[in-house]
Structure formats: C-alpha cells, structure tokens
Image (cartoon, rainbow, N blue to C red; front, top):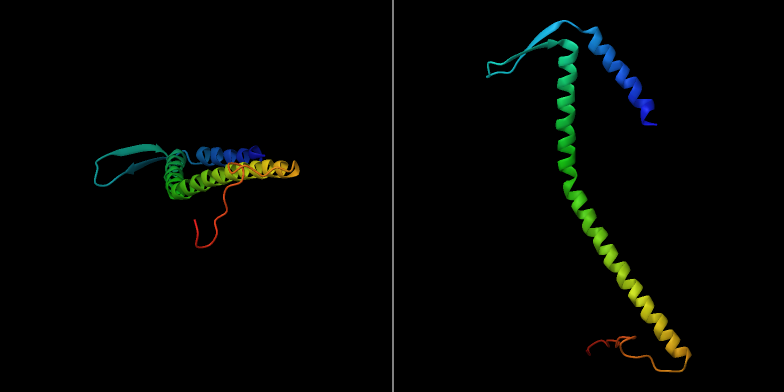
Length: 117
C-alpha cells in the first residue's frame, strides 16, 4: 500500500532533479561558505533537511503524551492485576460458602464500617 504513494512521489522528485540541471551557488550569511550544486539537487536536499527538522519537532512535541500514555498503561496493568486477585478471592469465598464453611479472613478481607476501622 505504501508503494502506491511512494513510487509516484519518487518519480516526480527524480523528474524535478533531472529537469533542473543548471548550477546554483548557495551561500549562508555570515559565513563565507558557498555550495555550488545543480538546482534540483539543492532544492531536494534543503527540502529533506526541512522535513527532518519538522519530524524532530513533532517527535519532541509528542514526548509528554507518550510518557503519560506509558503511565496510564502501567496503572491499567496494576488495576487488572488487582481485579484478577479480587476475582480469585471472590471465587474462593464462594466455594467456601457452598461447602458450608465460613470464609477465611485472608480470602475475604474485613469490611470497613463508616466511622470504624
């Protein structure tokens, strides 16, 4: 599926680079550096650099969201483990009750009454 979008884009970029062979001199002020390259290649390189800078900014902006998602996922795993343990205790208490025995205090924790501990 990716190839359906990637191949036409690659063809357009190759045609752009081949259609603009004239040399261009690129300078960066205040440095006395000059880069002479074909116009098509220069534009493609600058676009790639701009894309990478944008991807880096987007990645950095998503860091807090990924951290929060990791914390929420960890909390969900803890809650699932607690729920599994409570269901196991409930099943054990139900089996004890069906046998006519009083459930052990370790199986069924003491209920807290309002105002008492």
